View 1: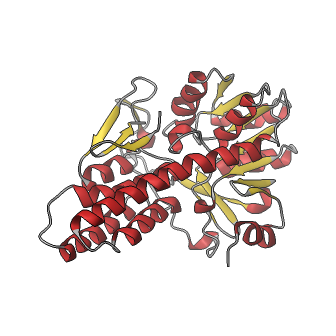
View 2: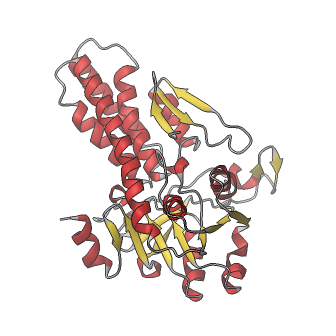
Length: 340
């Protein structure tokens, strides 16, 4: 099923509950959706793009309006609120801005509601199709019998459906290739162990879990053929992905293991460089506690960035819905993705 969809409100899989429990929640108000984004009930750049899009549709439906101008003012405020929930994943802003732009062309309350929801649904469907295309292109990079390392979760749960990095694996398996996956746990919130392992096991794909600190030894032993990760933002000199991705890229480069990034065009923020991007810092409790169990002294100093920049020089190729892009990226990205 889709990770996020519209059904009398925004319905989404609560990813904080997996793997202990599978639960679909409904957000009836923009504030509820914003909370779901902040606490990572919905996460992953493409899924956040859909969340931003559906968020504008939700804002258009959640209350009554005296007139069109009041409604448009409210939609703009809702857009600002939604954009403030996660500062690093550029797809969130893309989804918000796309649906808001269309909605603001409406001339009546009902017209705006229809336009917003129609555009959000269109965006969600496009995400599935572009993930499928990425999967097709990326699967050509995998050989029968390959073992693929992945980091964090870039699968169905991180998109509307199919996945980016895991979409490549799924497409290769669909082609009949025997692919094994080694998933890093991805501390501190364990999206790899909780979500990636759960997804792949649901699909019957061979997956082995390792701790993040085991990346070096499995590379050293020659256990990994390829690394494929997703991305939250790609700028002219770096890929921003879950904290720890940079470390994986360095180890892969040291051992001659190809390091691929799978991401749609909407993840590219090609007008910026890494030092211009705000990296989200999350709460200290994520490091100090695991559930209700305390792992560190409560008053210890904590540094908890959610993402890190991996230099593009460490990336073997970028897998997109428009094809696989190889270096030199400064020439090939704008040409293939048709950026100005």
